[in-house]
Image (cartoon, rainbow, N blue to C red; front, side, top):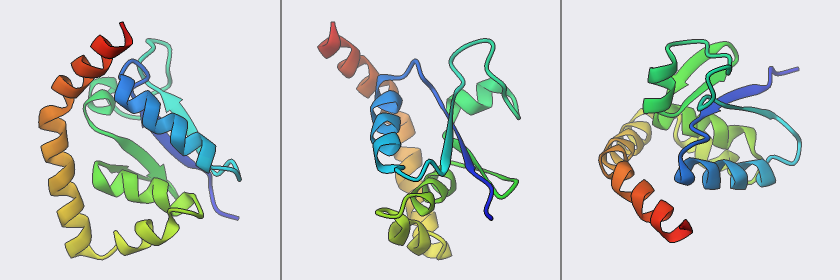
Length: 119
């Protein structure tokens, strides 16, 4: 039996919470353990700041971050599994990582926009 996938996310980020809510709904088998690292008492396997800066997951005992972590999460969800398997191909993963790095640059602006809409 495979280990449950562990996913760390920023529960204080409105973008992150929306995405994790969607992933929770899609994870009908309960294959993923979602861990909010925005609270001080959360258990962090690595530096908490690093977990807040990038998306992280642990798949079969291996820590992953960025696009590789997203791909691992996709592989754990049957509907998204084909995307996660395609992302194992290094050129595809490299493209996804570049897109993720671009997203990280605009993430603060997007967070502000979502928070303003919620206010």
